[in-house]
Amino acid sequence: MKKKIIFTLLFLALASVGGLMLLTGSSGEKANITIPVTRGPFEVLIYSTGQLEAKSSENIVVPDILRDREVRIYEIKITDLVEEGTVVDSGEYVASLDHKVVEEVLVTAQESLEEALNSFEDAKMDSNLNLSNYRDQIINAREEVEEMQIVLDESKYESPAVIRKAEMDLDKAKRKLNQEIKGYALRERQAISRVERSAINLRTHENRVKLLHEVLSSLRIHAPKQGMVIYGRDRTREKIKIGSSVSAWSPIIATLPDLSSMLSITWVNEIDISKVKTGQKVKIGIDALPDKILDGEVVSVANIGQPMPKSDAKVFEVRVSILGDVGELKPAMTTSNIVHTASYSDTLYIPAETIFENDSLQFVFLEKNGSVIKQIVDLGDENENHVLIRKGLTENDNILLTAPDNQEDIAFEGMEIYQEIKERKLQEEQEAKKAENEKETLSHSIMNRNFQERN
Image (tube, rainbow, N blue to C red; front, top):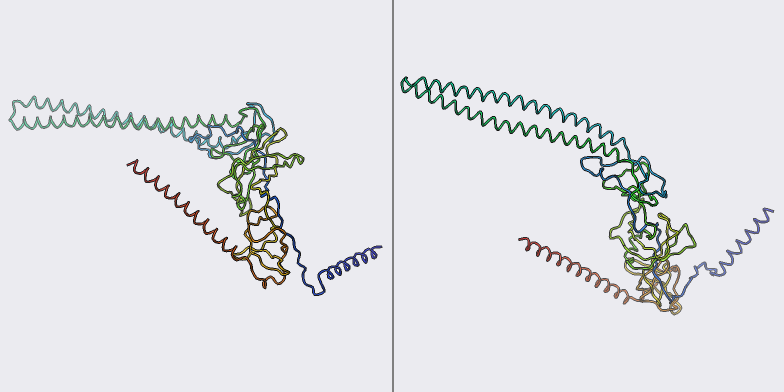
């Protein structure tokens, strides 16, 4: 039985090969498959996938106290997190942050506080001791003045030279007393300043320890209002999870979305992004609801691209507002988006695979008067499968789907179209350069005016 089936299959295969040889000719030449140029409505569509997101939402973030620069905890891990999709009331538990990190920082801060307290006590003792010594020096200087005064008083019956020396010794003692008094005032200010600095340093460490105790008590995160918990995303667009790190610069742990209005967040590659504009209509399919097709509208297009994960390609974020009833929709549902970037009611178009090109020309293989030529074409917009024709072809022209064997020997026609394309591109470049120069001139003018106003 098996042999009979094998022989039957071999027979059919040989018959098929024979029929193909009869169709293509015994010479083995490849048959040219042609298709006509089509006239009709033409839509330029961009296909992309995305996911649903609430148009507005309340963020659940790290406690504000963690953003205080005195805390000096720059990242902290999430150690517990309620399941995504959980509906919580205002004030209910959502997540916990890592206590261990804060406790380690607190131990270090307490040690620093102890050192600051010791420094403060030392500063007070040193100041008291030093000032006591300086006060003794003033007392000694004052007694010396009194002693010199007595010597002067007793020398009034002595010779003028002895009286003069006694007067000079008294003046010298008085100067020393004044210097000691002034020096004491300066040293007193220095001592007070030293103690005050130590006190400020002590208060700083006390405040930091107090702050860290408050941080410890704030590591249980609660919902600011009622809603469904949707995990946030970090700076790499990865979903937050247990073990993820959050910080003052990336503080979002989760969101509580407003489910009454939704967006489809999608990403368009850099080749197509120039076609996407705000206000364009979008058809949106929901993977989880295959029978549901929604209408949407482009509301924003990112100016800066981002690299795709594990790829060198860049994509741009496009936000699409969903119109109509969104009652069945949930955040993070996968969407299929068809952006209508252009529409033509009556135009010529051909399949994209019929277009060939070399370094400078784009052309098709056109059947003309019983032979084949390389017809240069001026192309317009394109969609996923077809390309609009501006010039070079007419309705019902027949073009080859694949290149013929003798393509190198076939001559080009339509060089005037190529010249028109070159001139148009040159004009576009000149206009773009002119616009850039005008923008630069305006910028310089504004800078000069601002400079003159400042001066």
